[in-house]
Length: 181
Image 1 (cartoon, one colour):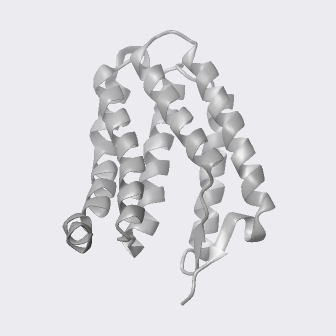
Image 2 (tube, rainbow, N blue to C red; image 1 turned 90 degrees about the vertical axis):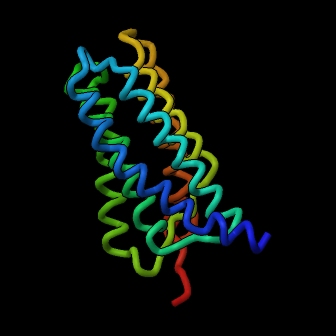
């Protein structure tokens, strides 16, 4: 186990960095896509989305969490999702009023992290992870098909995200936990 943690100690941060880098070709492919439908953009988005779950699992499994990961991982996730939202709204693939709650949440989370990132971490719950997975899946589906039904999947993700937010607010300190210095 000790050897395994040394071998993979760099992998979660590498996956996070790759996700940050993937935003650029993803954004270019989706921006240039006809009507927001792009298999290439969807493949990059889906692969980058999968690394979000994989890097967190590896970091927890092998106890190799890092300051870089705590700061860059949520940034990479928010950037990937928010770029997808903006471009899908721009292509008229997603209604702006459906994208707005997620974009506003991310702005508010950014403010909270900016104000408190030194001494806190967000306690993720199953509802929040499920909401993120549903939102990521729906965005992938929106990029793969010109049909409207993936918007309903996205709306379900928003409902789950609101439920997760309620759970966060019901926990001490609004889902934020103080970290020892």
